[in-house]
Length: 177
Image 1 (cartoon, rainbow, N blue to C red):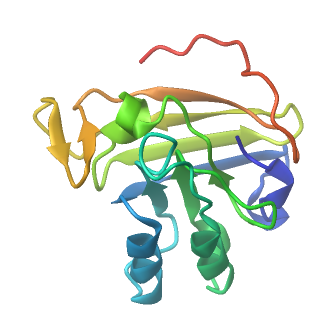
Image 2 (image 1 turned 90 degrees about the horizontal axis):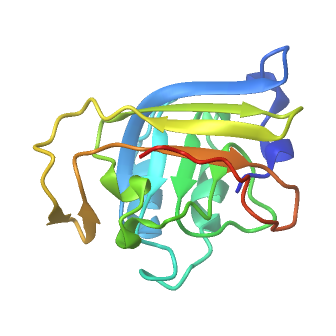
């Protein structure tokens, strides 16, 4: 789920589509992601991935601290956030949350590795979009317990349907994993 109006209009194309491709910066906790932001380890164009924070992991915690920290960076609007957790209603930026199936349930977000290329496209007019996990950072494709979360070398694709301030049923599209 994403609040499309929270994306800064200056990073949206004239056609109403937000496009971003960047390397995945993978974190298992919000604390670790905030620490990376505060120690200048996050750069413009990065895609922050905070996994294992859904119902099976931390119980679906709110990830407000990350978006709050990004808001105070001069390039914060050029960083996207993907998570299987939830966001506060005051979060801003390209924040895609409630990704399911979640990482600990074998979902595609849990298959991302540090440095994998992530392609995001969000049409703010049609209220639809895609997130592609390209998976070019390597990996042997084996299931393993890595940094607190199950992962697999196969990459996936997530279909997005955007709603503003309300949860509704999924988009109904079948996405191949």
